[in-house]
Length: 34
Image 1 (cartoon, rainbow, N blue to C red):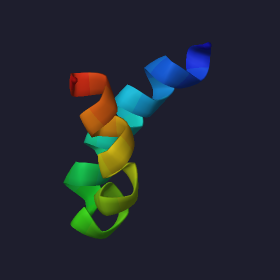
Image 2 (cartoon, rainbow, N blue to C red; image 1 turned 45 degrees about the vertical axis):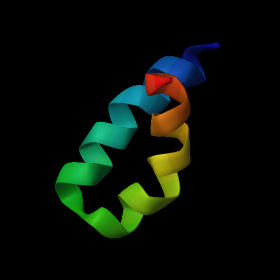
Image 3 (cartoon, rainbow, N blue to C red; image 1 turned 135 degrees about the horizontal axis):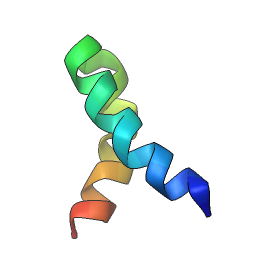
């Protein structure tokens, strides 16, 4: 699924834009990292 690739990139972008959004994607990022 292309969503997987997008999620990884979005997580980083959100983190730079603001920690508020990152919190939501934090779960996805953790899963990807391991």
